[in-house]
Length: 296
Image 1 (cartoon, rainbow, N blue to C red):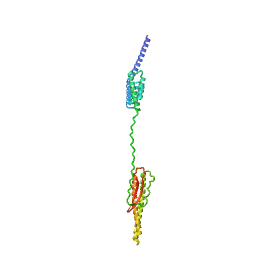
Image 2 (image 1 turned 45 degrees about the vertical axis):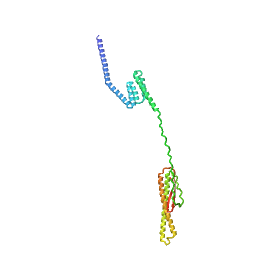
Image 3 (image 1 turned 30 degrees about the horizontal axis):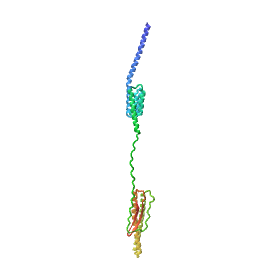
């Protein structure tokens, strides 16, 4: 009897120690949960806020990734539903439809009818918006009416002004051949070349007039220093040189002026037709000059 009493006392002591250990472990576990659960809940809420902010700001990839991590950690189907809402908010309708269908498939046995109806309504709304987007992208735009082209403007060719015939003008030498422009690239180039040639001819004529005038003046000096200086033949020769000098002055001045006009017209010419220009020196009784014929 004494043995069994000691054995019972020892058994009771062991049971008491085991119960105390179990109780202590339970208290420690509950204390751990009470201490860590707020931190876990706060972390989860912070992640949910970050996901919602990313979806609303247009960064749907970041928001969906955070929601995926939350679903893996908690197995909460609401995070799959929220992935669909994130895609829907950012007009990613095909991806949103896929997430909502995954939500219905994964929660076919856990979801109630209200949750299923909400997911199906979002699927229908995404299909409607997707059809509108496809219709707007394939609608042909109406062709714009083209304004009729204006009629072509036909430039009228001005008729050449008639050259006035000077009275009592006698041509002392055949008219020089018209100065052809050497295949110019434009009408302005031909006129400039003609002006340079006419001015050069005028300078030469002025030089000839100066020479004739010097010759006439030297004959006057000779006639004054000789006895027979006033013979009719020398007077006639002196008059001839004097006339030629004036002819050279007149023709030279006319050619220089004509050349300057031709060169100025050539600078402003815009027509592509080549002008035909001829310079005709003329002399008459008491006058000398040159006539410019042709059309510009």
